[in-house]
Image 1 (tube, rainbow, N blue to C red):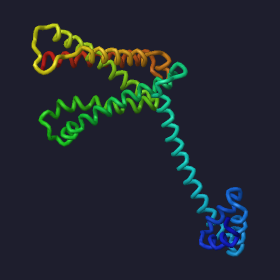
Image 2 (image 1 turned 180 degrees about the vertical axis):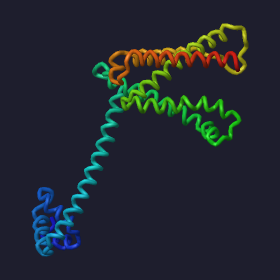
Image 3 (image 1 turned 120 degrees about the horizontal axis):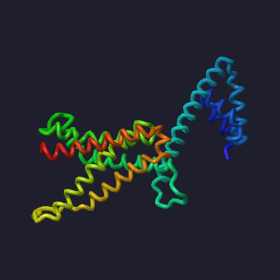
Image 4 (image 1 turned 90 degrees about the vertical axis):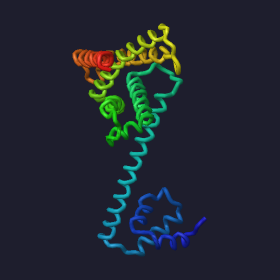
Length: 254
């Protein structure tokens, strides 16, 4: 164990603020270290101005440490929330808050996957290198739409509900038509040289987006986002109408 002499030699090189920090937290140090700090403090014969300056520096360090700890705490809390949300073993029925987190994570994950998967197309479109800039812009927009909507939905913003509700309604229509087309192709006598369209993916898409619309339109969900019945109907109907317009455009213009 170090003696008072050992600590005294060490404390000659510490700053005034560091010395005050030791004296302000006596329980954190062994008796020999505390006695050596007291002797060093007396030997310096600091003026009130010097002590005030040291206190000011010490206060700034403490505030910085508090901000750092607060940031770490937020990171830990967010991590715990995510782990609790994706935990496959749930002891109780999912609360509305947990459902909100699940929906946000699903849409965010989907958006990020499509963003990474299509990053080359996105980059070419932004730079104007693609010959299909207009077409690709319409393809890229839903990706950004999903990313922004999922973040706002996580933050319990009304705009987040409107974006994801609208997006889900659009995709319900698109998925239903895609399912119809895949079933029609399979039932036809056409020969598929490279692949056979599978309705399974379209069935999953119909069920998923229909489920999203159903869950998001429930009263307890809408109450959190301050979405009344009129806003709900306007969002879903507008989304479905846009989906129908896309189908009409693809059939008659492409």
